[in-house]
Length: 616
Image (cartoon, rainbow, N blue to C red; front, side, top):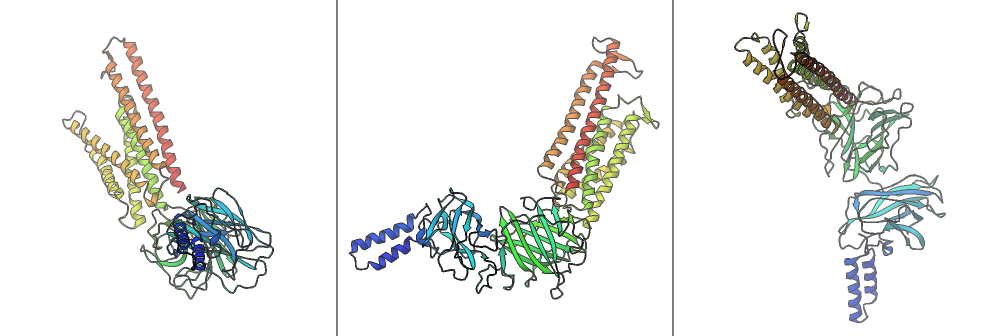
């Protein structure tokens, strides 16, 4: 913290100028020096540090800043109000000044105006009132906003500087901020820029003063947004834009990520052999680089960078970067020409403190077709799930949410209801049950092969999902094969068959639900979480509740009446024959109403899942 800005310097000066005073006085001044370095000033009144901007905390400043200064303009005129932001990980103290960019050791210039007096206060450095801003307490903060007022005698070029204290022994001194200039200012003799190791010194990095916007998308710029038509100024929008300027293209990329953002140009919808561009958060500074992707191995960042006008911004978990590159770069191997058509990938993931990137946890956004970013401006979306995987999920939901569930309910509870109704020479319940189950087999079989076509083989990164899926597929095939050898109704082995038929079907249904639970959160089909889990739990509860309701109803009905083979009703309790018939008819009507409601409910769940798949 800057609780003790400048006090040691004061003490040292006083001590040096009083070497001849009595030893008691000297000891008193030494105590003041020591006490200042220990207790400090949590109020932030640190005028004594106006020149050096160094807190006297008994340790050396850190070298790689974690915090960033931004402004909302690149030019100014005397009297202008410039919005200044200081932000980054939690910090306790700060000290902000504006100085002549050509003479950074000169006094502070201009004055500041506060936005939140609870977090910041004005200080007077030298003869200029309100020429610095500091903290009011050691309470942790993430963001400071103030306004700088340009003076009438301002230098042609002004740079903002900040000292930030994260905790007592951890602080950074004179963090360089952006440079703003008066109109028609001559070229600078010295510029202080932050340059990444992999970026050539001829391509300085600057800071973005505000978030991107979607103006011009579809009319002047080629834009990709996910979700479709989202606002890039929001906190949940992935945004990529291309704007052609003569022989170069200016590119903007942003999205909610504290690790990295990347996009790639590809000749197909598979990772490998692609031209990639990455914005990587390295210790709260963003490094922008190019890379060439080989297969599914991690990208190797290029040592030579073909990018110019690199800028970045990292605020509230949203990473933004922009840069410019020539449409054609024949001197750079692996760089595609931007006047051709490609599939476009947009990915995000985590990065370590040193800038090492890790595999993206979810499927990248992939455009549905090939596009020329220098051609007709478009404003498009994309999909984070390949079409084959979407079809796989949709068919499985249709099979195991609708056809199987309804088929089981019909076979379990509608034998007595539809036993005297026939369809194509067979009892109606049996024909309906068989049709639904054969439909399930067909849908499951088609859906089963789609992931293998997409992956070109077995997926090693899908966890238990493919193993359980294969088990469900095997049981799905085995069930109708076993039904083909069903014994006659009165055969001795019919009970054994019934038990195997029921247990195989029940096992398949349970495993199918578990498999769908696991599949919904895989990267290739990442449905909204936790919506997908709650919706699947709701479907299971809906099915079990309907099953229990019909079981209870059947149990109560059997206790009242017994249906005899010659269609006569034998009374088991004190009911008349007419009353028993009415009860039996009511039971049939009740089951048909429950089945209708159940089918409608299943349709609602199915539509919800299909709509979610369509949106990803």
